Image (cartoon, rainbow, N blue to C red; front, top):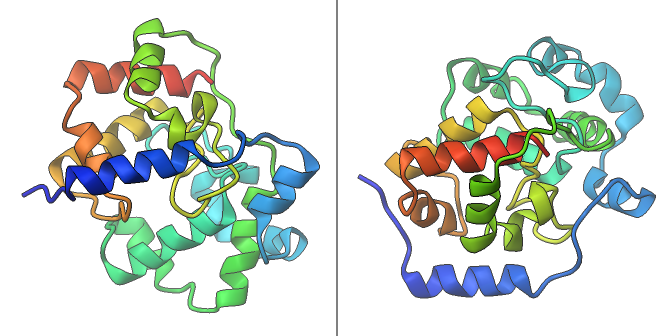
Length: 209
């Protein structure tokens, strides 16, 4: 069963996102902001096991594994906590997250991936997906072309340049309620407004950013 928060909460959330600061990029200030409290230098070694699946610098080629390069450190940490708590489930990540009990180590690992330049896609173009992304207000929280916004970085991830297959799965998981980690209450509602074909189109647009 899909649990969706009230439309009032969702609308307020969208308005709050839209009222925040400018879109993020790879400027020194934005990189520093998304790195957070961890040490990218220390995290480079500590992330050795993570790189096996997520790739060097977080640029994995596996379409079902998320890229982590340039992702917000706070967001990465929160996902690990979600796996530890069981509110998000994956056979591999649930096991690995259970070993990340040292907060400093987790901060450093997340900071390492966050310190990389933002993920980039294959530069494909999908006008239908772009229109849906804008019309549905996705850019208000995820930023222009999915590149993020400096504020709310532990809530709304960078998704521009992410793998299409991974994005489609996450949208479908929000749609069915299989993923229960959206504390804003927005994603379940938006996903249920989209057809399978529209989800594919949005994911295709974002994967090419």
